[in-house]
Length: 310
Image 1 (cartoon, rainbow, N blue to C red):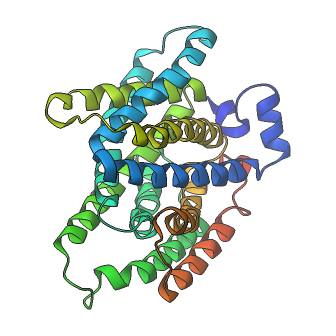
Image 2 (image 1 turned 60 degrees about the vertical axis):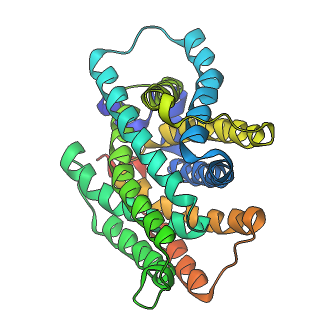
Image 3 (image 1 turned 30 degrees about the horizontal axis):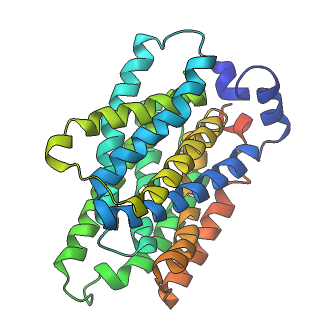
């Protein structure tokens, strides 16, 4: 297990991580971009058919995509300890995803992503408690800087002078709840990355969440119109690829080193919100984005995987 933390997976992958210490950070940034596009597609699908139905179908399609790959490459069934983690993360992940997309139906995409950025800050301390990771000053400073950017962006909607809008208020509350769950999910993701391969993690994450959500199908499921299926299908593909990339990256760098890079998702959300939903950018949004980019720059170059594990 120590060798996995220090050098990645055995063989060539670990050697590549050691020779290119910034590679896990680059992979994480790509994964966050894919997740942001997935969020945009899921926002549209949630508006069309509801967050529950869109999420359930996305998990089902994701399982169909990645499941056969795992079945043909697996060498054994996961151990009991790993299965317990899969079950726990499935419950946490399904609640996290539903509350996020339900809230995203009610507020702009970029603002929803911005509010969710309280999760990495919470995850830093959860990682210290659950995983025993040492919280370095640079990681804390980067997260606080990113959080300041989020505060600048969100102030117009949630501040004292914001117009009254009960629907938006419930949306904000739902995303904040999702953020707490997401922080827990990040720590569980780190634990899984040290015990299993990315394909297995992606398979059980999609299948587990789908099974949890299926329990509520008799009361909440609605079959989407034909025009909504492409968005759900594309989001399933993006979700699988992003999970694989994040699992690879989290096996090669500490959670506290990678979670500040989640802040870059706001930039992608702003772009996709503008392209797909005609959501504009305010001066406050641009100011906050500058702080977020600065936070990501501070975090990545100073946290090499082999240094973080030393």
